[in-house]
Image (cartoon, rainbow, N blue to C red; front, side, top):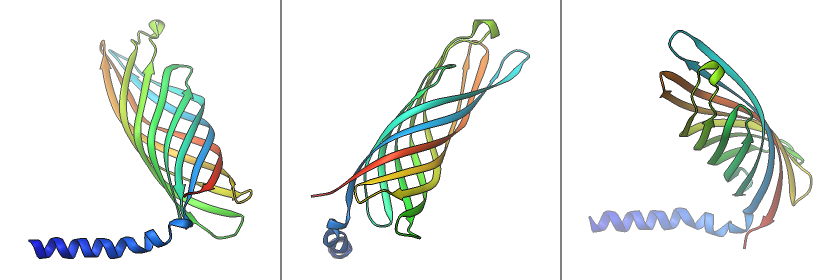
Length: 192
């Protein structure tokens, strides 16, 4: 057992050496994001099924780091969800950058986090209010334009899968997913 632990510690040390020696190649990031999202909420009750199509704007911040090929963020977003009383997200994002030219790169990413949703009551339709916190996961893709060494402009599309079903007062709400188009201004600086 002691021999296995020694080998594992040695392997971990050797594997971490390149990361430590390239630490000056990482940059810290802070981003401000504006977005427009669409979410469909299916409601079903005694004899009717209705799909509410909701489109709304949003704003968010992202804090993270990047290397030449990777970018990682912690993100928080607030959505101005009119028919929803509230929709906020808090999550983690990882992006792989395809550096095909000096001023522009293409990226593919994955995201995971929590979404807090609250839908207000609609008495005219017989719909009670509901609120929930749901885990989401998804993907994003887009382009980064390197304005200069300190600022990137990003445009992309994000898909977030919710898989949340709630039942209140005989009405079932099904939140399945939402799609967001977004643009970000990313500020970069060298990590110490």
